[in-house]
Image (cartoon, rainbow, N blue to C red; front, top):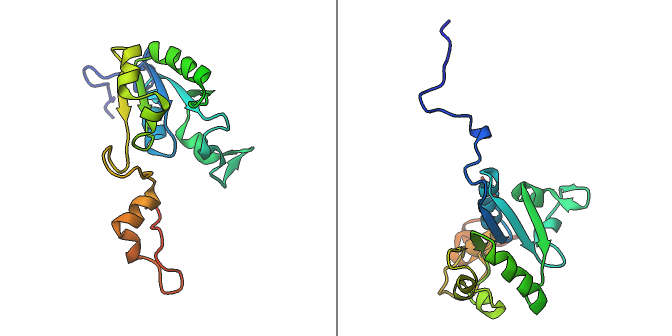
Length: 177
């Protein structure tokens, strides 16, 4: 039997953290943002998840639970650190400003208009850190009505739900495949 050897230039992906030294502020909830920043964390980035004082809503999205926390929360937030900030509070916004000044990337998925109302828009954050990469995720686009981009909202507004259910249940959300 021939020995299998590494290809030229091959490396052990588990020993190389391509984003080591990159700091990312994660102001996201639900799925798209937390999954994206988790991938960055898996690649070595230092992720600081900014949660509401009551905690991220997904901490309660169960069952199943791991202790008092939803397994869902753990599934999309591995390898992150967390801080609770009230972005309506001036002192907490100053704390965020300090984090922005020392970060490389900010990722948010608020509804359109929320960042401007909270004083954390792209323009305001770039004044604190001119090299900041600002990633804004929107399920319905930045210029459409300020709707949340949750899966069931997209299914309902697109008409997809009209293809499911029956006379008794009415339209139903399609599950994940």
